[in-house]
Image (cartoon, rainbow, N blue to C red):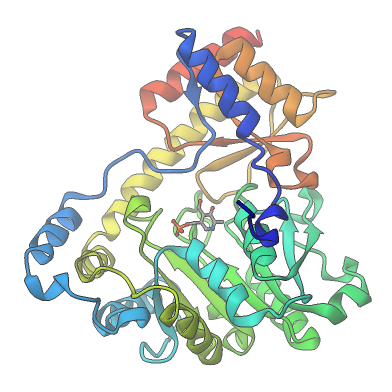
Length: 388
Ligand SMILES: Cc1ncc(COP(=O)(O)O)c(C=O)c1O
């Protein structure tokens, strides 16, 4: 069967080799612990599940979703309310809010809505791999903007060549950042708006970790910046704050023209989110904010636990204050892959190699804190023994 060229351009999944090794180790009876994936293990709060069950029984909700591709108005209103309370951002639910099947869907639809074949789209390196895939599927040309520890993992706009900027029509950014954990600042947002305006670049600010911040770090929306709505959209999601990754519910917010364009893509792609899931989403946003604090306390404790082990094996560093990932430097002289392999072979612990997120991820590994406490403890004890 001939497969479309656009798919052949998407680079092979870097975890594939690792997956094979894990499968083999498990078949040999090894107790493998994975710290590679960012997916909360604690369940969705009960009251959200109850709201889904209640509304799923109503036959009205068994039909195509209300307002189809846009998301039901009550959901969009609730999102606007949440943004006002959490980030001080005012949004018109009719024109500036759109329901999504997770923020990942929004990344793809942003490209479909904004990018013409041959346009350059900027993304950070290291960065979330789905951006590259979305850009390539949409016929765009990805351009990697390095982000480095010495700049707080924020891009340096002046480094981007003028000929690249001429062809660029979009940029993906994500802070609190997967994989580095870095957070943006208000001052950076001002510079980002000015950069986007000066170069006519639409910003896709992917913000699903906006609530996952530690130690006094401020929760931030790009849309709280003056002029942000003129230059782009923000994506967000119920996945991480409410332990709802499997439910597939999120939102796009901001520039009304881009929101309308993304809505047109959705209109011709899917028929929106199951009403009962949207009702459960409304309930989460309105009543389950306590879950966020509960989860943050768990992640903070796990962060400390991992940092203690890392310090014991000679890796002491001051991690940025966002996301449930730790972006850990490999020991001196070891590459990302060497360190990943050593952890697997000596401790049966799986982590993500930094290079899975781009060439500037070399020298790092990513550890995810979304693993039960007892498994994390076991992993840390094994690492301490293996590297003693
Ligand atoms: C940076 C980033 N964007 C988007 C997503 C996808 O989230 P959602 O579940 O909202 O589609 C993830 C998930 O890990 C992510 O890390």
